Amino acid sequence: MPAATAGSTTQRLSIARAFEAVRAGPHAGLGGGLGLVPFVPAGFPSLETTAELLPRLETVGATLIEVGFPFSDPVADGPVIQEAFTYALSRGVKVADVFAVVKSVRDRVSIPIVGMLSYSIVFRIGVEAFVARAKESGFDGLIIPDLPPPEAQKICKIIHAGGLDTSLLVAPTTAEHRRSEIARLSTGFVYYLSVSGITGERDQLPADLAASVRSLKALTDKPVCVGFGISKPSHVAMLRGVADGAIIGSAIVRRMQKHVTESPKAIADAVCAYLSELRV
Figure 1 (tube, rainbow, N blue to C red):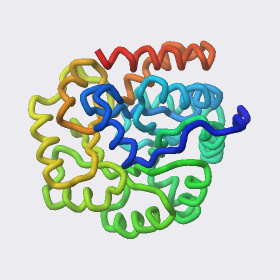
Figure 2: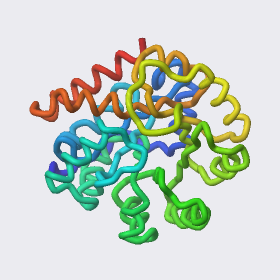
Figure 3: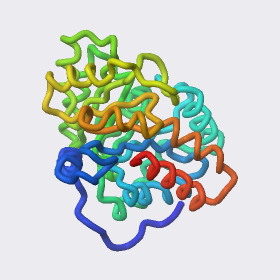
Figure 4: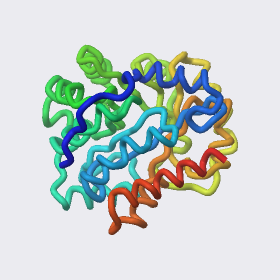
């Protein structure tokens, strides 16, 4: 595990401030007021790669970073991310390693870092204990896709009391009354799924996606970020002026897989080059 670098860079941004910066700067994020939210599977293909990549993402305009906790049965993740998690687990990556690698680079990353993970991991450790460890490690928020609806309010209250934001998911099939409740419980941003189902790159996004995002934004003043299938400049163009952020997951991981036998720097170079192309 790389040691933390001494000293500090710029002051850390909250999730709210990060999106304010995107709205204020026409060339921030992906341009046109659209934030860039890359997803990184922790420990894939190594913890050293994660430590190399996280600070580099800020240099290509990332608004915030999602860090995925490896899990044997990930919720809603397609085959690309599942394979990455399986690989990391086979190399012995544990929850404690994810906390440690984020902490090791936190003073070199000023943008927010949000953990994405299964509720099973949180439940096993205990909500209060997990939140305390995440906060101490430098996380700013949590995304828990399989958060049990009957317990969501109670769990979110504990997370907020521990100093972390929550970002809950809205699917195209989510009823409007549930959308309002999800938006209320989301203190970071609302995560809108472009399609129902699992993650993965897609050639086309739904034709009604922009209208769906506008409808959701009418229910909340929180930032709305769109994920699932975002992978091309044309997808990004579709979201500019509509959503607050574009979440890029499987497309990043697939490029990491192409360079899996190369050095952490080479993998980070490939990911950063790809993300830079999305601004076109």
